[in-house]
Image 1 (cartoon, rainbow, N blue to C red):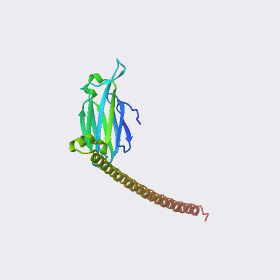
Image 2: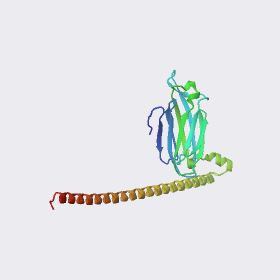
Image 3: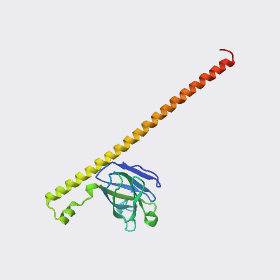
Image 4: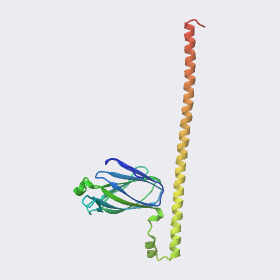
Length: 220
């Protein structure tokens, strides 16, 4: 799901725990696109992208020139920058999560350095792989000289490890939700007590005020 904002705005797309997904989006000259990926801890993430530049003459997107690149910035759930690097028109970035939670992946072009892109539009194809899907199993099999059965066992072990990480992350989310719920319930309780106390004090004050009023008017 994508949302369109002005050029200076940041678009946030929420992607639930998904081992791999590919998409493309359009980006303006000064625009920045950000994605939120929920990732368990100690999980490798690989992102691959390629760019296409809009050509007014042909009315289509053409492969970008080598001088046109993308800047990739990744923040962990504590908003700490774990990757900030300039890449070319095609690139591949890799990082490993050390804190479970929502990681923010932002991309923007180096349009200020390219007069060709000024006022133009760029299409970015992005492919993000998480966990065991980042492994190149044919390469691993060739390097370690694994049989087909051994390679299959290796894949299953990696999948089990990733499932365990995701289960731990879900438990972590449930614990945080429980703590938030308990904190909210406690605040609601104290607010209810405060409201009750205020009502009682107000009632007592009104009774005393009315009593004084009637005594002053010699009605009692």
